[in-house]
Image (cartoon, rainbow, N blue to C red; front, side, top):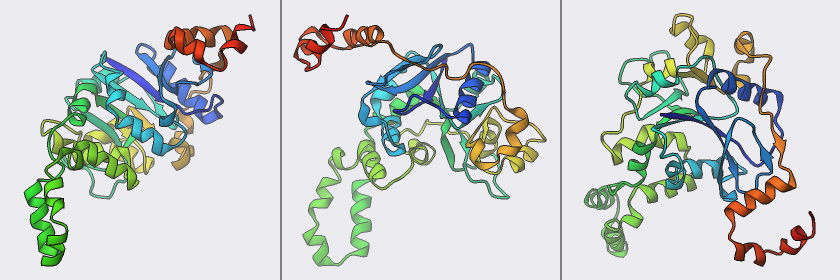
Length: 306
């Protein structure tokens, strides 16, 4: 029903805090399939985690990673599961509530970002954190594949005319036609525009997903707070009556002292190790055709080393 997806990068060595994140995932989420998102050429193996490889262009920076999390290919890769839990390495989980949250009836639940003094009425949404979020796979795909316009073409042109001169309207009249072409006015155009503008990936889902799919359900702020903390964990803890949520994001950078009593100090972490040459060849054989291997410049070099 659900899988845990640990987002990694190009490195294969992890600091102590990242090892703690691995440890909490292994201990509290042991009964679920756990994946690591890694580049095609990533040299490491993570025992107990299933590698899910994507092109190198999606790794190396937060900007590249958010392109992956907004791509159709990412969600298609997890169609065997109803839900995926995105788990960055600055995340902790404190107990196994994953199936409970899967049954809560939402398509997207993210730990709330900024909380104000009056943030908690039911139905009120708050900025969410995608680094610790639960997503219904087919619902996210439905949004990405939507045929809905980002903005109604007639409404776009009406607003444009309100703020421009007649001369500008004549010169830019082709815009009116372009907005009827979905390449320039659909969800994929919206994502390209957002990514170029530095808009966070986790802002897209709570703010815009329901525009493309009105049935897309996002957890309100009071529900999301029970799912996870990010900002002001002590204040959030008080709001929940002295109870920890399912998990937390950004724990070591925001209030490490608050979380210190709840950290698992023993047990396996990433257990990462580099692949042997034999394992690397086996992976290459699975992914590459015979003709492509023969055409590779490294073919003769590889062949001469037993």
